[in-house]
Image (cartoon, rainbow, N blue to C red; front, side):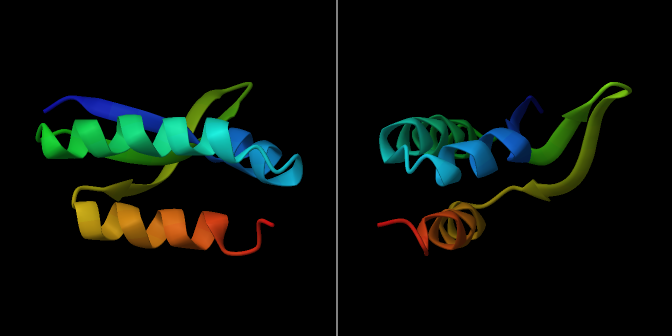
Length: 74
């Protein structure tokens, strides 16, 4: 099983600048990967490498995460 990693720091940065287009691209690619049977990893990139803290394997879970990300965007 392949993995697609979402850097949560990047998600937070895109939220701050209200860049919905870039966020939608990330979630589109993540959806493609899940549909293809891959796993989406949520994590933070630090100097020591990737610190994974969650994984998403279903479209429903990804949709719930996307809803939380977009909740407060204008």
